[in-house]
Image 1 (cartoon, one colour):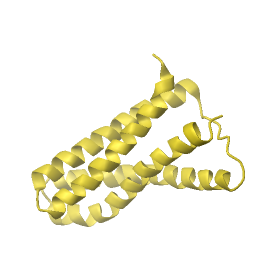
Image 2: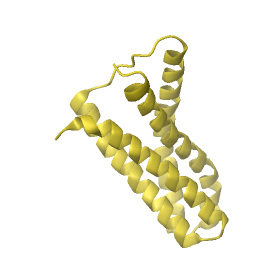
Image 3: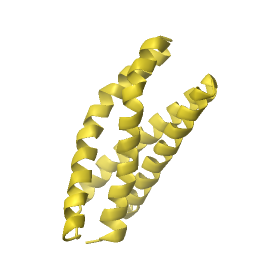
Length: 140
């Protein structure tokens, strides 16, 4: 398998997740529960595929060095650090949010989703930004 395509695939999966999360939010605000559910399940699927693909890449290629210098290097590591921390935090939040929805405990689902959505969106969007900085703007 040519693992060199995995960073681009991972960025695409993060972008797909972000688009589905945003669309799902709009769908629920419009009262379209079935469309919201589909969007959120696709976002979850994209995130799970990203996680699997990123593990394969990381364990095959190891960490990629960041070649940027100066202020962009600091910005990169701040983004990477917050992205990584919140990627860990989001796992139990997504699980709780999903379980509450599947059990049709929508009041509780809505309470936790207010936290889950912005954090999940941040992780997805910064994942694309990290890819761009690491592989396109400042490749090693």
